[in-house]
Every structure is written in C-alpha cells, then in structure tokens.
Image (cartoon, rainbow, N blue to C red; front, side):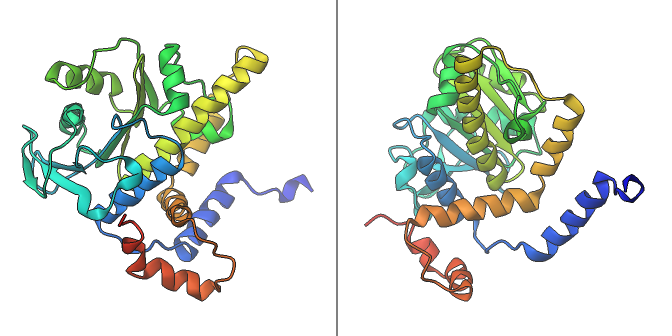
Length: 280
C-alpha cells in the first residue's frame, strides 16, 4: 500500500487548480469591500469604541482611504470612506480621518506590497498586549501568522505623531501582522480581504492562546516546517477571498436556508449587497 501513497504537493497542486476553477468572488469596488471588512470586524467583536481603524492604499501617490472619524465599524457604508493625503487632509468625501491613522502612512511608505491596514483593540489580542506577550503558534488555525506576526514590546503612546509611525513600521518589518504591547494589533495585507482574514484569525489565535495557557500552562509551538507549509496553504488568495465572501454573507444576518443555490448567487451579485450595508 505504501508504494501508492502520493506526496502532499500532488494534493496541494490539485486543490489549487480546483479552487481556481470552482471558487469565484463577487465583484465589489474598493469602498464596498472596505465597508464589508468593517462589518466583519464588528461581527467578530473587534470594535472598541472609535479606537479601531481600517485603511486602503489609494491610487493617488501618498494617499489612502479610511472610514471617516466618528463612526463605528458596525455603521460603515461605502459612502462613509474618505480619501486623505499625507497630512491627513481630506481629498475625497466629507469628514475627517481618525488622527491615529497617521502611523498607517509610515507602513505604506515602508511596504509597497501592503494595500490595506487594520488596527483594532480587540478583546483577546489586547489581553495579550496588556500582558506584554507575543503570539505563540501552537495550533493549525494560528499558522497563517507563523513567522508573520511581529511583537513591539514598548508602547509609544497614542499614535498620532510621526515617531510612533517610525517605531511601529520598523517593528513590523516585512511581516503581515504585529502585536503592540499595552495597545492592540495591526495587520497589513496585500488586499483588504487578506488584512481582514488575518485580523479575524489573529483575534482567534490570541483567544486560543490565553485559554490554553490558563488551562495547561506554557504552550508547545508547532513544528516550523509544517507551520510554514500550512501558512502558505491557508494564505492562498482563493482561500482568503472565499473566506472573506463567506463572512460577508454572514453580515447580512438573514436566514438563507429557504433560498436556492441560484438565488444565493443572484443575491451575491445584486445591488442589495450595497444597500444592506446602509443604516437608515
């Protein structure tokens, strides 16, 4: 029997081809995707008043899009996003940005690959930050963050000036995420979907770590080579995007069991998706 065993890369390659064939993503513009990301963050318990921030790099040099200040993640609609420049002046839309998004500028400058940044004070990641503890990758669902979650042990204060941006972007380095001691976390994605995916899984990983440590003490990290393999697999764009789409459907909160599969597909592509993000 053993001579018929196929190597793992055979199944990896096959799954990749089949995901490309069978998994599709609804068409959304940037502001609608940002609005869904905000609703997902709210749905997963990541709001902390007005402390959280989300942004996406603008096509305009040195500018980015962000949720206008004064709104919570659960209120976000596509019309609530504004484009701001390097001095936080509003270029497009109405309103002002959260002044603490200034450190996003430094990450964008240092990382041309980053297209979206999320920062929140979510409960479990903030508990790790309060305890000044880095993330320990000890379970498969944590592996998208394997060797990809930095740790800043010093708190620079409220990040509304340039010094904090220099410190945070420097500590992040080439990684996709960072836990900020005494503060919260940040994820930096190649897409809005990736930044959101990492945010949800970072919060889950922090919760898992705290619960496991409370019950059993120190955790044993997973094997590096296996964790690296799982990291790359679980960050495939097809998996990231399909997971994001699933969470988007969850934000609607309406029963879907009575709809046919064709109705699901039509609903996903209809303007109702945008309308459902509006709060009357």
